[in-house]
Image 1 (cartoon, helix red, strand yellow):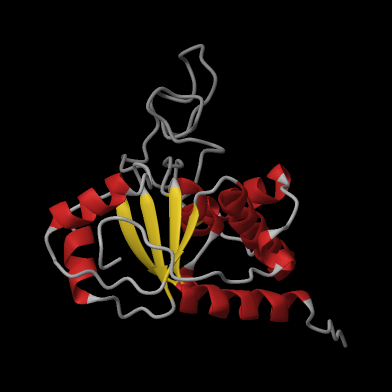
Image 2 (cartoon, helix red, strand yellow):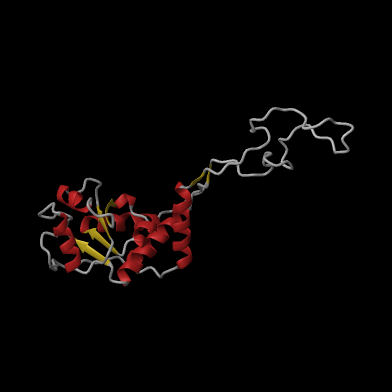
Length: 215
């Protein structure tokens, strides 16, 4: 990252169980829907007849009018009356997806990026300048596309990288513990540090081969 043009520093071995997972659209879709509903809150609400700020009085006399009896105009069969079965928000659509599907979805997303040659591994995210034009020129020269997700093994990002990326909405920084399926699929290119790849492989392999002890 300290030069505009790419320079090969070595070859690393990627574990086939992590970066060679067969694609499954249903698992990716489940992860994306879960992440959307995880944070979504429905604020829709309709007033019932008990919520209306109306005087509780009869609209007309009970007898002698030739009409059906009515106690008030708050009922749902009256114009501007309350709603009988309307939404009663706010309510959350939160639910938890299983660990197995979350782990599998992450492996599938990483494998897809690797197969499409949209996964790039760098030694670090340190850049020599905080100038946004340097970062833009670097990305254009290396053909990383219109949106890039940079992933490091820690949440303390390099200062120059943070300042340069803050000028662009399509270039984002993320620690490896926050990596998720939606963020991977949202960005065209995934750039990870070597330390982030090693830590991610370790976590995913531990989850894959963990003994399922149920009492």
